[in-house]
Image (cartoon, rainbow, N blue to C red; front, side, top):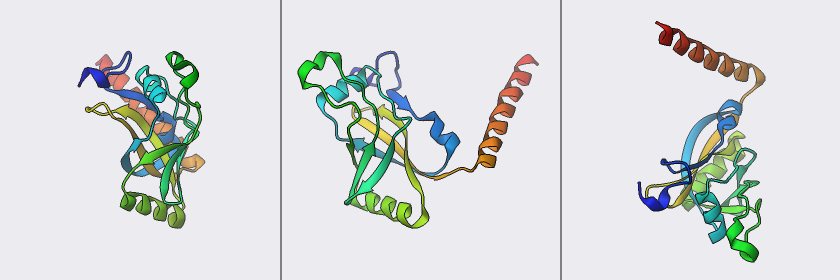
Length: 159
């Protein structure tokens, strides 16, 4: 991995992960999209500061937008800083956007951000997922499976 793409304290390029999304939603399909960012936003991301837990993606007028993602201000940018919770345009092909839009409108699915990271070329990317919301019993089942996997690994470690 190039030095440019490394994040403060991380070597894999991951900036933020929405771990709650896999619990709340059944992710059916994923798509990697670029982000249209300002310079101070990129600097903030390189410091490893971002929150995509409460954000979502929406298709509006044929364009894909990331809404409610929090990129804290970069201290060194001073007066040329960015708005922390502004809408950010996601970069994807027209065909992919049309396909996502169709599935959201017809099948009642949601577009949720899963991971925000820098790829091996140093470009900021967002992994978004086309998802269906889980009901409470499904969430309980997911929690049971997770607890069982944890217990199973504990038992195997003891032996």
